[in-house]
Image 1 (cartoon, rainbow, N blue to C red):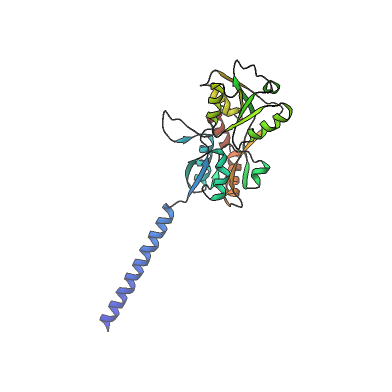
Image 2: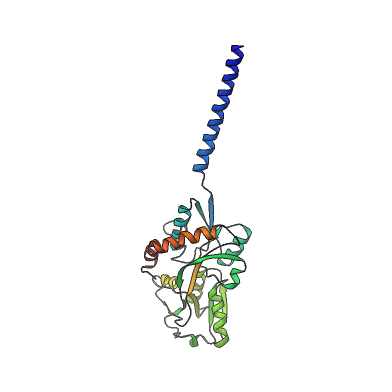
Length: 259
């Protein structure tokens, strides 16, 4: 009787011990296993997102730092996936990306397919051309070939310009493609976000540009799949970064000055 009791007691204790160990392992695993969020971007948009090929194949930039800060505070790990800008909205819809940070403006057309955070950065349109092109105002574009990035708000702006000043519009997937087409003479000019264009001017010294001063600023926001619970979470962190000066520090790091 005692022997059976002792054996039964031992089995109960052993089972309890195993259950405790299992519970401990699950807790440990949960603590160390952070969910990975995929950030979709188009890494041709310095200083927002780009690759310094001479140094590494890592995607860096203002948007990347912003995403790292927010995801870390929310307890997530992050993976950056590079793709053509024109495919980013579809990447959200198909589940290839959890959010998009790519200097994207929340247009009404895009809002039909994805949700957006609050604006985190403002910029202007810039007309970029060779220094000897004679292009210094919008009217000088008449009859010229103007390049834009496929799927961008700059493409919409080109169509708007075309209504008043007839131009031939050509699109490319990447910003560097637009720059190369201008240098080769196939494009007379291109419409690029001013901050991005200025980044190219440091290396491409034969290029110059002017901003469309009467235009409203093109605000950038973070894009999410429709009804994603991440939108509210990101907005909360973004608001705190604006209030505590953390966002300003990132702006100064990547753009050299506050907005």
